[in-house]
Amino acid sequence: MSTLEFTKGQGTGNDFVLVLDMDGSLEISPAQVAKICDRHFGIGADGLIRVVPSHLIPEGKAALAEEQSAYWFMDYRNADGSIAEMCGNGVRVFARYLTEKGLVELPEGQVLHIGTRAGVRDIQKNKAGFAVDMGRWKPESTDVLVSVRGLDVARPSQGINVGNPHLVVALASTEELQSLELSVAPRLNPEPEAGANVEFVVPADPMITNGVGKISMRVFERGVGETLSCGTGIVAAALATRLWAGSDAPNQWSVEVPGGTLGVRMFATEEGEHVGLSGPAELSFDGVFEL
Image 1: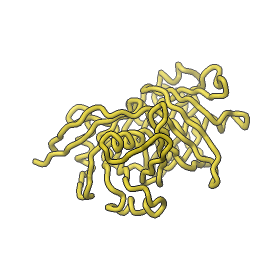
Image 2: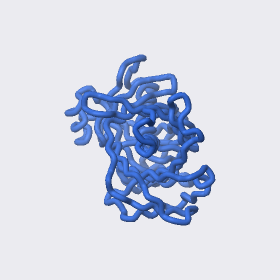
Image 3: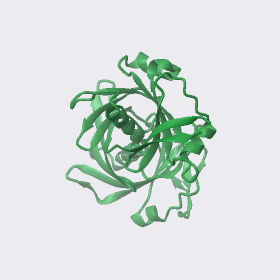
Image 4: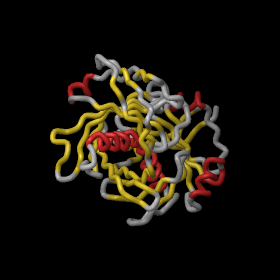
């Protein structure tokens, strides 16, 4: 029976199994990913991340064409084994893995370029842990109604694409947020072709304090279920709330999720507005798993 050396890591409770594939030869089937991520019979995680040199896989070669210094590629799989474009918490944990395992050096003020299926992501160390430039974003115009246990009627959503698809739903109160039953997937009408992560958001009272917007959020991730945190979902929730709040809304947000609090910042670049995510990322333990 083959064995798999791994490292477990987490960012605000969003947890991952990381495996190093130095020669690009590691093949893990969707069924094996699901077994590894199973919390009863496996290691347990929200997803699996293969750490692989970009030049060894086709998706990584595309990342190198975008940024030649993107030596490492984050090959991310959801807990059910399906492929995902990107993960905002996962990419910070990925950076923690590379630096703690001695695979890269990342001095203060320097930028680490990481290849993902959503494009190259730029990462820096900061006081919170790591900050990642999530790149450009765009609102989606498709009207999707979201039905979920705990709410009497379907609610409209705001589509946000930050490299992967999200639907953000505004709720009226903390009580509504807490009453959601997310052990069952929300129903989407119409169902997006690629599916979507769904975020449920409540603004703080007051929503803006000292120029920083504050919201609370819960999320159902496609291919996973409810998670304690979702990096791209946190970014999408802040972007959608700013859209709803209007032109006077701030560009800096604090987002509280069950796993902790993360920061979101929108900022101008030559190619358009980008959005950044900052927060902690930690490695928990190493181990060996029998496939």
